[in-house]
Picture 1 (cartoon, rainbow, N blue to C red):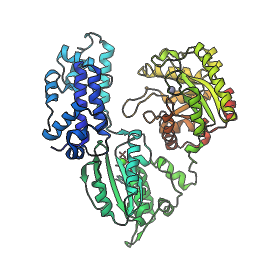
Picture 2: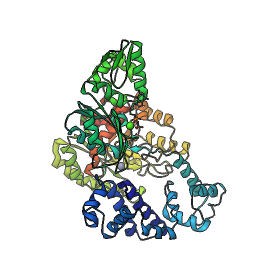
Picture 3: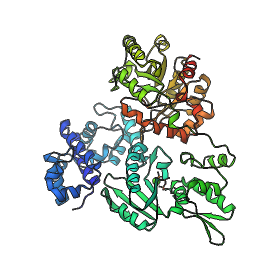
Length: 576
Ligand code: DGT
Ligand code: CA
Ligand code: ZN
């Protein structure tokens, strides 16, 4: 039996889900989840490991113990798993699909099945529409409506993956290709190169003298599960982790047109093609072709744009949303870069739910070249994160003062807070406390699904508080599929523009909130932005480039972002 890593992992995930619905103890279900995760991320074909070393070799895989190894062996030998069949006798397999509905957990699924015999999403939808759920134990009109909107959200699911999930793996593939013999250049293309917040697939663009050799290596790489298409220019594969890529190989002297084409966006390309036709050239991934059939080759993207009378356009803004007109007019924005960021203004320490002490965080910030760090631990009401009372804030100040002495002039440390915007639109600290702090980030984490007018009013109230400096992750969306609060952005942006409150671009690749389009609207209205990693561990700081890329997609320049300022400039702004 041949099974990909992903297919194998999916079976273990299903086992875990059914056991959870059954109400099995957590450590048992966790074992299956851990195995699924480990097999997905393995980076090589599990069939090879098994063929070479049998069950024993499988034990070397992290998260795979004896019981799981036996089950992998059974699956790869027979294609079946007796244990799964046994579990399915107690918990119908269909029930697992109900778990894909947002906010519907295993306990509720079990109850819905037990009380109403519900097996499928269609049955659940019908029952909810008929008002049959509201009278069940622990349910009500509200939770019934929530299930219905969850089912709707499911229908809108995109199948796209968050940029942050794909980019590290995609870069590994690119770097692997760069090392192949005869490869002159290789780059990511498509939505990944444009740094869209979610991506459909991985595009790889290669310049090489002998394309056939590169394609042969590409389709037989150890982490490839399936070859989907094999051509002379374009081939595509599915990897064992379930991700897909397409590879285009061109002669090095055609690399510029090829990379430009593969980067897109499609709308941007269509526009360039039209412009080329206006000067009697036909632009393709191969070249500019003249009317007489002769070709004009471009080895670099710069040359492509030059032929069309334009300077180079950065990939992040190639969306046909004004960049071509701006380029022609010599008015492309000088986009922000990672090196411009000198401050992290949203960071958590061990005082709330962060992993680093104030000193460790300060040292990490300095190591990365930051000049300013704001400690912004949570306020108390959010729960589970050990939010700080005013008493504890005062204690924390003593520690911060010590660290300030230690760091000296190298790093300006601000004591702030991430204050919760509560469901009733009040802030979680009284004004005296907010005023006492050096900097205030206000965010919403709870009751995000309030009706539009209410949640908008809530955010506006926080924006209008004179002590609030930055609104953290304004919509609270989660990529790929959890939508943010239903905010009236016009109203929010207007309030921020009026009060001079900065809006965050949260760099966490699951957030990227504000998004690119909102960021562009904000700066057009003169609103300042703040790009932050929302640091909880040192690794979070590695996400900065995602935040910067989102800003670049929104045409943001260094002057729009308060994190680019000197300590003096920032302090003056905080006072004003
Ligand atoms: P994705 O994968 O859905 O996140 O989005 P992209 O932008 O990566 O699009 P994809 O993977 O379908 O195609 C990769 C690039 O190929 C795309 O960015 C531009 C180029 N391309 C695709 N289809 C067309 C087309 O019909 N005309 C032109 N001019 N270019 C195209
Ligand atoms: Ca793509
Ligand atoms: Zn935070």
